[in-house]
Length: 144
Image (tube, rainbow, N blue to C red; front, side, top):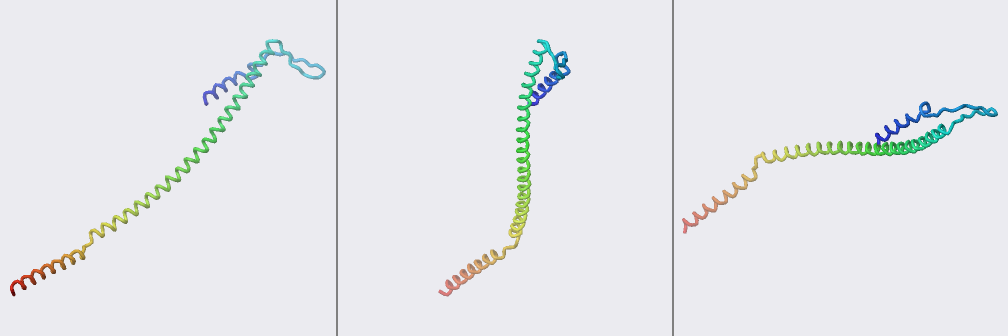
């Protein structure tokens, strides 16, 4: 697109009045001023008019393209803003989950490192029961 615009601008520079406007003879009839051209000058005016029509259409097309690009730019900027917000939310959520994980891990490790008296108590009761059973078994065996 930019290349077309540059080419169009350079060609528009060629179509300036000072360079391309044909020589004419100024005449005045009944107080009205007229520019008179010979056949070559009139042909050049037709070329200038055709160039003007072409570059006017080109300018309209390029203006439409610029407007579409501006709209796309606005849309993309909105997407960037939305993605930036999403990234911010996800970073804060990641930070929150990391802090929660650290706290849960700390609690879990504290629970693992705590002395577990209930298992000692259970094994102690089981051991006492086994000893009592053996002693009772020996006592019964000895008396019979």
